[in-house]
Image 1 (cartoon, helix red, strand yellow):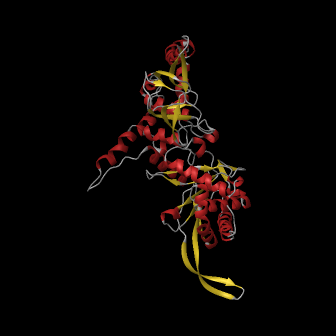
Image 2: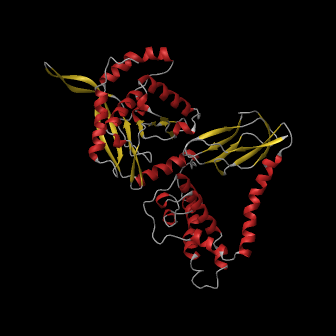
Image 3: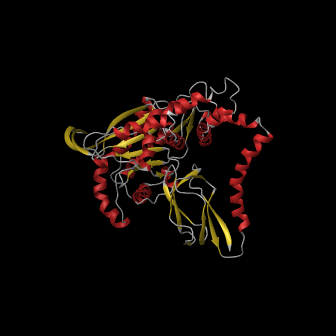
Length: 455
């Protein structure tokens, strides 16, 4: 037989690791090629990973709950053929042994190197790095390890603009957990034992303080519900966005009577022809795309002191899931699609989102987001920006209202269909003039919708 390593696949341009949620196969199970073997969660989506080759699952290298880098081996599959274990199994066995040998031999041969490495991983910034961006992965690790926001701001970062990487925080955690060992070695020096103390002092109470308060503080007739993984992620991202971006929201009311009349006239024929519903959202997206072309500085992101202007127009659309959670699939290159193309793409993404069949690519690289709060009967909302974007538009429910209609013969009172647009934007880079003009332009395009449009 031949042994083949199954590795963590790359599941999107910006995804560098994934968390093993559940093994669908166990050691000894027969696996067909392309059959799902395990479920993996990334910071964007949960997905199933298929087998790269048929055979028998010989060994599982990564347990459920572990975070694995893209390209790292996660399992060994036994296939038919000659015995060739040397290319996979010994390589796996050698990997853990190398780190084990390093700590035992290095201190003896080079006693000065170990304290130096400890000093590098344990050092703290003299001043807190306030306002620094932290990735969701770093924030999750900090929360699990009981590292407070104040302590996190003192961790030195090796990433761009001093950001804390996964390696930075894991090194810090490892050093903090073994803080007593470094303290014992340099004990002859009076000043050195005091260095770990400030680290241990804030960190020791943190894990104890966090669970105690909520654990026993409930009173009355209540039900305690544990957040699922997606809700925890949404929660953290929303808090991060409000911390990172100073939000401002502008409101505009648009007369969408022509759109309502056109859809009412067209939707039945469209459903019969395409086999799917024609909603208002593709029309809203088309107007947003046109407005982005008029105001390209709304289609940007912020990286430190730099503004990154995006040439692609990728529209994220918030979709409510049956679980009550929210996910934002992306229509890539929306400016290159006509109304029919937008409608079909949107229906496809929404349908797959609700049955958990989205891929990481479906959620990658949005440049602007729209949320249809009107589908829940809300007339307006104040949406929270999806980082690192700088703006998001919420469209409200369409309501009939009396309005003044200007005609060549004079003004008349009539019944019209109106809708509120709520535009939240990042005041670091989008001022009221740009944010207000953009949403007004979207409303202008909606009000100018041609009732003779064909789809």
